[in-house]
Image (cartoon, rainbow, N blue to C red):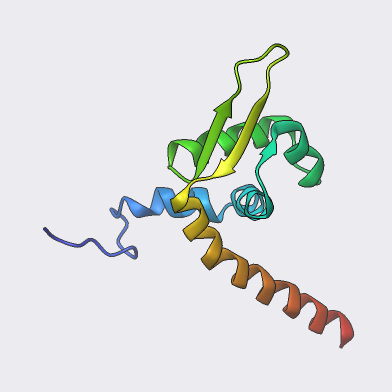
Length: 111
């Protein structure tokens, strides 16, 4: 098996990288790392995300295997989102990056 570098234009991991590192992708992973949530809870938690972008981001992250969607099959509908094992592993790598970014922003504001 030949390993294709992520730096190669033909590397299939680039699509996944784009999904995970998009602004909304990172924020959804961050929010779900705190706890599972219903769609409306995510919409309130992630300020500024439109309904369309939240729905699209959740769908993409679900198809990538990072987010699980649990439909409780009730009326009115109750759907809950959570991280899969792969999503939790991803969050473990993203959370330190977000912390570093927040620290950098605080340092810049103090200057």
